[in-house]
Amino acid sequence: MIASPTDKGPQTALPGARIALVLLLAINLFNYIDRQVLAAVETDIEETFFPASEYPRDPKTGEPEDKTIEAKIGSLNFAFMMSYMLIAPLFGWLGDRMSRWLLIGIGVTLWTVASGMSGLAPTFVALWITRCFVGIGEGAYGPTAPTVIADLYPVKQRGTKLAWFYVAIPVGSALGYVLGGIVAKMTGDWRWAFYMVVPPGLLLGAWCYFMREPARGQSDAVTSRKATWKDYVVILKTPSYVLNTTGMTAMTFALGGIAFWMPRYVFKVRGWGDKAEVNIIFGGIVVVAGLAATILGGWLGDKLRARWSGSYFLVSGFALLLGFPAMLLVLWVPFPLAWGFVFIAAFCLFFNTGPTNTVLANVTHPAVRSSAFALNILVIHALGDAVSPAIIGYVARLAESWEIAFGVVSAMFLVGGMAWLYGAKYLERDTALAPTRLG
Image (cartoon, rainbow, N blue to C red; front, side):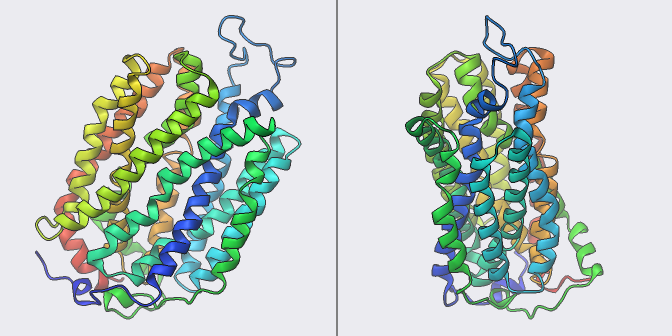
């Protein structure tokens, strides 16, 4: 293995690391609760803004005769993702130059208020606009939070620690489904599902203003400086970064499509269970599979790094390839047996979370790390889950087959897995060069 300057830095976590990780994990948890509450109540939103009295339903299926409604509902996710991915590069650039904790605090406060406003939206257009502001708030958080963790933990621990941070994705997403469905059912009003995240979000945002900013590059044993435009070009010339982003884009496309449409597919298309039951089961699967896979993936990537320099890519790639047949079986095996294959597919999707984000941190210089995460956010969402719900909804209507629509999702498992396996050959070199690689 090539000796890397990052391996010569601190070998233990730096002061304040644990508190910072706990706070960022808590914020990330509410981040994903807020995102997936929308999916839990999307049928209620449809009934509110596109009522049967104005938009006739098919008497056999109960689906709206207007074939654009699914795409319109799916565009709510696009509104969030569009603003999130477009604003992220700006906050990534700021994150390389000013206090990241200040940016995180501002972002958390903004998206929390905007989430509460989602519940107050009187029209579909107003709801669409509030989701844009949620995305702007999260754009301040997404590129900066993982770089704080990278500056507080040594390279040999980053995979595990970032995995704990990203555990919030499955847990928060599942809680969004479950709590969103429960609150909407208990109150009889889907709007309360958005109100519930406001108090804890404001408290967490306020806590950020009291956190101490870590020095950039301290865990890499390098001195950071303000980046120039030439330094940013280096990111695009790093094979591990480019291939990692390619794989993450395919994975994000699949994950976004499954997360948004799977409950509707099971309940309305396959005709199994009721809406609340499906949300609870799917949420439980996501939280258990995602929690186990995220932690195990981060731990295994770190554990195998001493033996295989490309371990982060290898564990990610093989897991995603194994998820391909599981996703296909979901479409053909009857429920409730098919829930087992939903679990396997979800496990394989989340297994890469810690390793792939560790790659982003390890192959970029601390001076451009926030921007590197921001660029990754822009690409994976612009070509991934920002468009996949609308595309899948459109394909399902056009082909009159949800099996064909989810077949597109299945193909993304193959694309992502192959990109990561190919990237393994470059990872050792790019990690070694990262601390000294500027334009």
